[in-house]
Amino acid sequence: MDAMSHGLKMAKMFSETSYQIAGQIQPYWLQAMQTPQTHELSMMVALSPDTWSHLVKIAEYWDGPISATLRASSQEEIDQIREIYYQSNFSRRTDIHLIQSSRWQESNLISHNAQRNIARLYARTEFVCDVPSDIVVPTNLKLTFEKNKETYLGLLRQGDVLVIPTFGLLQDLAIPTSKAQLLQQITAHHLTTVDSDRDWDIGPNTYNLWTNATTLYPVENYDIYYKPIVIESKFVQPWCPERFLENRAACSLVRYLAGSTFHILPKDFAVQLENKQSVTNEVDVRLNSF
Image (cartoon, rainbow, N blue to C red; front, side, top):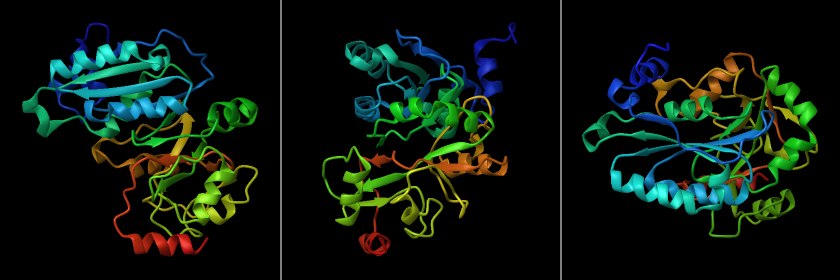
């Protein structure tokens, strides 16, 4: 391996990515000043210049390590982001891994699943959580993880994962930061679920159970379209299948097939910043079952 060029190493590790693009992967292009402890949790996020502002929002709520990939094509964009990064408060705890591609390569871009794998590979903690760039975790997840460290680390190291239930705002409202606030907004039909297409009470997360849950409980109604945000071990879990490109559900499926139990966190949750529901009536049906 030591005799291989950087491009060849990257191309072998990310075999679904073209050699030209793999050679442009720059791990730790911008490196955090702080070194996290190994047992900490890192957020992972895939970015472009257009979604850089989402990282600012994620870091507003998450005061922990971040491992992010940035796909950019113009030198002007790259220079601007470098300048913004060093002016930000979160630069001290955020590693940025650059994937540079020229305009003519747009038809052969690196997939989001490959970007997830890059962020995971170069995360500097044992535990990671892949978060889409338009989703924030507004609860004090860092405190939850620390308070339950003995239990959670045991589950993660044996190959299980922890699920963070995810909701989408249906109106432009303040993001809830506690479960009590969240349940109020659900009752008012201001929020819906986004990590499964199943009905409120029969989907993988069984949200009627979650509303009253105080301890971890397992997913029982798994389906192949399930794409939850999960906390996992960097070293134990299978990698996201890159051949499925943007499909996050494929990442969950390989975990499930490997024998992982999905444990749902009882108090923490994530919120999608932009509502992607296209059929309001379907949302109302799901919420009316609450």
